Length: 59
Image (cartoon, rainbow, N blue to C red):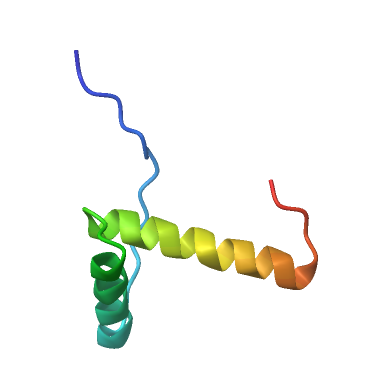
């Protein structure tokens, strides 16, 4: 039986060298095993901050 994907939706994102470097730094500071996990966490941090600044309720 095939392993079920936890993250079935894939997105392609273009980054500057500085953004890629900052993601790599974040990954190592937080001891994350993959760059994908670092990107997911940074997206969550950004979405949470955006929701707080606009007064939206968080799910």
